[in-house]
Amino acid sequence: MTNTYGDWLRQQREAAGLTQQQLADLAFMTRSHIAHIEAGRRMPSKEDARRLDKALNTGNVLSSFLPQDDAAVADYFEAALLLEQQAVMIREFALSFVPGILQTERYARAVLSTPFPPVSEAERDKLLVTRLGRAKILDDPMTPVVWALLDEAVLRRAVGNREIMAEQIMHLVRLAERGRVRVYVLPFELGVHPLMQSMLTLMKFDDQPPVAYGEGLHMGKIHDTPAMVDRLEGIYDFALGDAMPLKESLALMRATAKDYGHRD
Image (cartoon, rainbow, N blue to C red):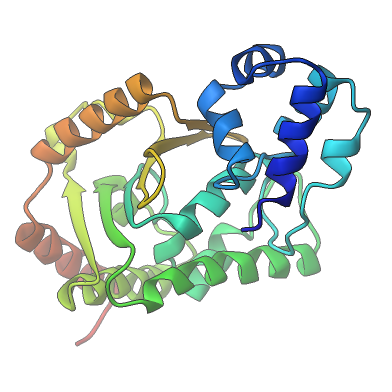
């Protein structure tokens, strides 16, 4: 990522006589987020850029010159997508769907086939290409390290049809068998657990502080303040302690795939 945009933001901020903290307060962002943008480690989302323009009285300059990406994703996921590509470790918690980077093509297509409001077939195909493209980070056999913590509901709720579910579950099993990802299941019998309110992604990097990303219905938020990231990491670790061990999780997944009709 070039640092042109970050340099530009810093120049605008200094011309306005603002510190990073003062700009963060005006734009309803964190100082660390401003610092990362100026250092070229992150790019703001479209909404962040709009708030920065308003805080700096720069019209729509920062919004208009935000680098465009051909990737088709929801606005609230844009910044998280950039971070996902830079992470050296990604820990996912999934409540309803298999995490995007672990989805098969047919499973992803089924997930994207029921949006509201409806989208055109061309737009759906563009979203599908982006989602499948995200999985390319797994082409590297070592980085990023990926863990997936799945609520059992992810396995039991049929997405698409039984054949698609069997294929998707076995895709996860094979990734785990060759050591590319680690997959753990939080069983129904556990009852209530601390991650039931939303999905969660934790990301670590070589050259910047860790972040957390939470997502709900048509909304998502990046958390980068140390106290909040520590808290969310603690919640994830607490839930992981209640999950089935890797070997037992994979056994449950194989059995579930077989129930859906998978044949070895």
